[in-house]
Length: 102
Figure 1 (cartoon, rainbow, N blue to C red):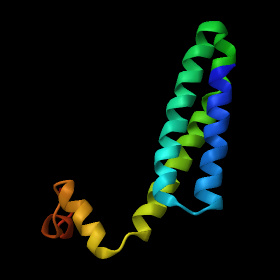
Figure 2 (cartoon, rainbow, N blue to C red):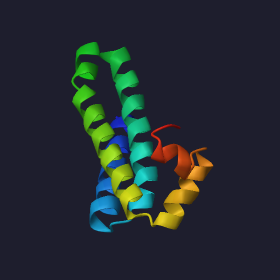
Figure 3 (tube, rainbow, N blue to C red):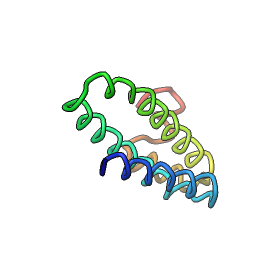
């Protein structure tokens, strides 16, 4: 029951942070914690009843889609200067990106 309440609270918190307050950066952190809580709940549920655990798979897929949406919105809101700094931190530069290489 604890795992259910934790993932429920984190899901509600992500909704409040991302959609309510529009704090996209914090939303990425919250959705990551929510995803971990979902995985934890599925693993715990699987040890009790496997059929119930399989019914939670759509929730995991929805969390993955929500996380991807959050990252895309965050990336699109970044300015060019911040985006270039992030790309350089990942080892990409403008020359490689123009040629389609990493």
